[in-house]
Amino acid sequence: MLIIRFSREGCQLANQRITARDVARQAGVSVTTVSFVLNNVEGMRISEETRQRVLEVAQALDYHPDSVARRMASGRTHNIAYVIRQSPDQAFLDAFMPEVLNGLARGAAAQNFHVLFEPISPEDSRGFAWLIHERHVDGLVISGPRTDDPDLINLLDHGVPVVLQGQLPGVNIPLVDVDNQHGARVATQHLIELGHKRIGMITNAGLKYTAAAARLAGYRDTLNAAGIAFDETLIRYGNFTPQSGEAAIADLLREKPTAVFVASDVVALGVMKRLQALGARIPGDIALVGFDDIPLSRYLDPALTTMRLPAFGLGWGAAELITRLINRMPVENQHVLLETELIVRESSGGKSKETVSS
Image (tube, rainbow, N blue to C red; front, side):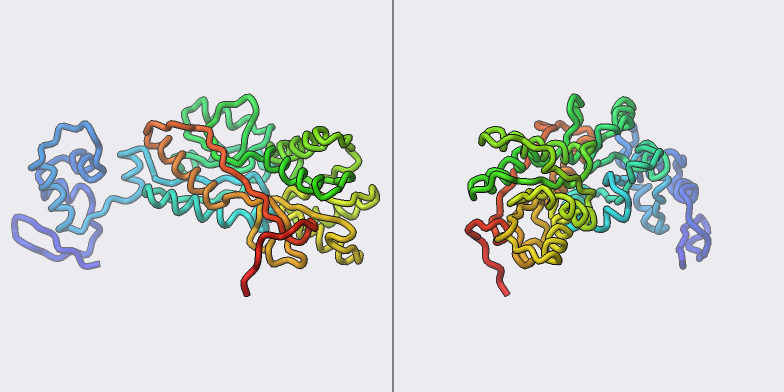
């Protein structure tokens, strides 16, 4: 790169890297003053004349402080880690996640932050603290928190800004989530209103994931409220993947359910594949309701009845909350619950209110 440097001898050309020391020498100030000015450090007694001189010299020399220097001066990188508590293989199969990540990235960019996507398997013993020290992030958004995540409390104790996409009982951590229990109630009630009494459930994940436990609780409560006895033999457990759905429904069919609430559309993909391979008619032999409303759901045959979650809103809301916490701005509501919506399509046998344009 060709650089024009100003000196007492006039203009000269140089092809060496410009440093803060060069700016300081030309502006007649200390390197510390240069750092304070270029990083907009507040509270420093620097005259406007000096500030403008430093900015002009930096511009003339085409000097740009690197990210490490900015971090040293401000203590921030403007990076946010988006942590999903799944293995990388599971995370990249999750068709719901891209729109959440889209909302998070766009919301963060609106506040001049960047997002690092970090799938962390539950078996990973490093916890979360390494993201602060090795990835140098300013805060974390954690999707799918688990009840066995003690490292979360350690982060809070050390003042690390954290926002959950999920709810942990007994822990006061800021969150942006949906009411999973209510959504499961609506899904189950839909099947009850269609005349089903032997309703199975396949969870989205193991019950250490709080969203999975909440959806199971909503299903159970709705059955009890309708006078239908909760039967544990009608419960099977998914693991975020279509393959887990295939295995779960193959086993569940021995209990002869007439309908199944599948608490994840991705898991439901495997359920539908196995049912169709066995020659079962959906919804004639067995009705299905999913959860999430991934983009593919409406294009399945039959189209999947499901609970629609505001994926983009979950991401945008989390970005808005975490950036305010990082910037130490006031937050009126640290516990945000977004609404879900039942989308009735063909798989449940209900009257579909949606058409798919060609």
